[in-house]
Length: 493
Image 1 (cartoon, rainbow, N blue to C red):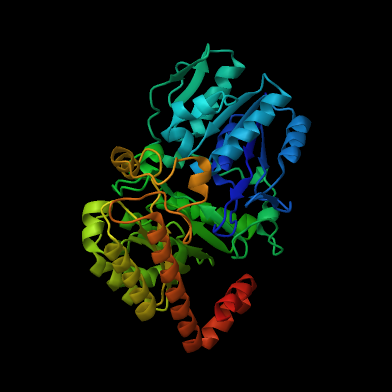
Image 2: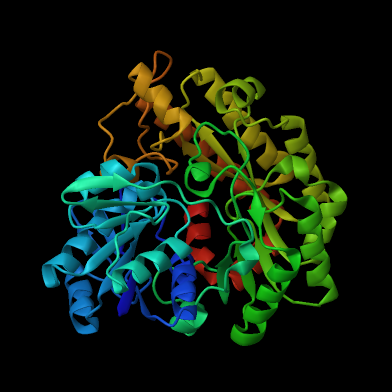
């Protein structure tokens, strides 16, 4: 039996951030489990390629064309195809790949996993007629059991954590318990992809500017209750993690075998278990592993005291991003439910600046329950952190993702500014100048957009001032990261 796992192309809408990506980590974990079970598995990354982006209307699709994907599937002749469905805004491309697969071979089994398929599995299968099975939650052992059942011609009814069709009726099985011991997972299947394709200095495709960098996830699950976040819906609320020893051995492996220089820890709660996290930092120092690392998904600022920040920098931390969300304490407590003290955010920023550790923070505006004045307080807080402590501002508008408390609130109160679709998710909110999907009695989408626009303008002015104050630092950054030169020149102009 031959299994083909596909990372589909991605489509970017007006005002989107530039395409960025790296290794298809989720698929590589699936491939590793299947490979260990002696199945013939291949990976097709149809996003991170050399192909020129395709302009379709007012969108840009990055990756292989669908004609090229069709050719790949015809040539590889798989029996089972698994397609990544990373998030709602890209699910149309996932469905399109399944349609191509069924056109080539109506008998091929098509499987889709990811957050969208997990949170709205029934609705997804009703829409995606060419998808046979949706994996709900973690997929490593679900897909293994699916393949085993297909091979042995057994029913799917006893496989936990999947939705599927039987005689035209959508069946949703009992949930699969989340993995308790993540150390049982093999490393991602690095050997099944061309690592130099992702790591070489030419930076083919759409990649991070960091040299020889890879993503890594060392934990899963989120015990917090932020109203906008859907992570716990497909990864659970309980924090689960690889042991510090597993993480250190994993880092040692990729640095020794692939000469990795930078790691992006994409955990949702990297620092939740402080003892484990400190042990990882201690191990990096003791083993003298020379890497740079960052936290692009954000960590909690209230868990990072000054001594720990010093240790993080000694262990290779290049930048630390934190999730702040709002600069208004009342909104944080009673609307977003973040349970974060803003004074501790300021203390984190102050300490990080004192040890010259680069920082950034994520903010979100446009929640039901906010007024324009609340949003402006968030902007003012972000600009204050930039001015005093040089904390980068990453400002977004609230997105009512399926299954979240925010979605349910907007649905109940008729706060949706437009009919929700894949296009509306893609063209909105997770972009600084995107269109808000929410309107309330207190604000309109255009008002949210204008606040974000003015905030970005003032932020660029502050950035320019900081660059003038620190010309040596700025020139060093541009020299080490030439891809930033164009962006820097735009700021100056």
